[in-house]
Picture 1 (cartoon, helix red, strand yellow):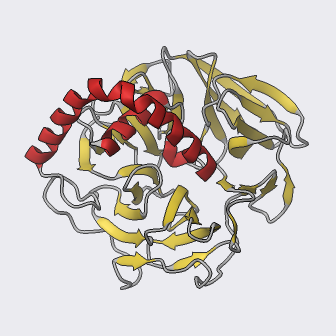
Picture 2: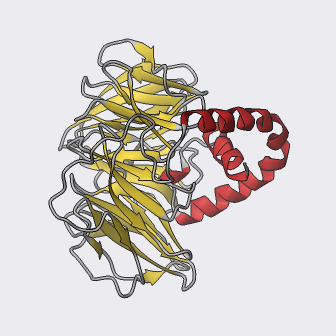
Length: 376
């Protein structure tokens, strides 16, 4: 029950979900959750009882989140590697290629082309991405999102500072502005952009893009879609959407009964349900990324995006945690892995073929933390 209360508070109170957060932010926001827990516990107990009863009735399945429907075959994978891959020591893990997406370490950004540069603004940040020849950077307290030119000059500031969403091709981005609007921008390599503004009452964050040029948004316990025209419509199955697939026309998120689901954005039909929080989809729409055990999990699963069938699972030791995983390409995930026993960390690459390797050297987690570039 304690875990469920904590998750409920996170979904109610946080502008950005904890699965997107850095290790330092998870620790800070966990302390805030603990402070709110006592006051919230009484009002949530009744809801928890209902969720537990529903879960028992439908038969939730294993921790790895099999769909609640009849078992489906997993998506084909290129090798016969073990279904469950266990991580041992970070230092013993083989070193692979450098990350194909950018990452921050301290106040420097390591870009996908191998170059490095100072963080625009030269201060702590929670989220960042490249866009239109420049950068979008969310402040560490999520109070503002700032758009910078390629040389680091600030060009615009938006509030609140929820992390932006970016399209699969990187040419579009969307963010919340003025607390009741969503800006959808098409960027150009010379730094210019064309922005369309949509009024969306009570919006708190933009989740991701969909095939028709629209975006899924979250806010006040409602999932909605701002389509390519002027229409804002409900996602009836989801109260808290948190990931989309442009290629697959899919939206993932939390349902009113407390579990998680993947929904077709074209028909609003629930395709499958899970106990795993689905945090992202591969660029080709074939696979979904699922996390277990809350905000700092030890289990990461790669799933068939259409059925929820488990393709691969990465299991970490007791003293090790996964933070802010991202799809690196259509077949690999990058994640920040922190070993609290030795205060060590590295970016780790996990593939749908079962491959596992480090993408960076092992560094101290007490000096700086990694922050992966925001991707779809």
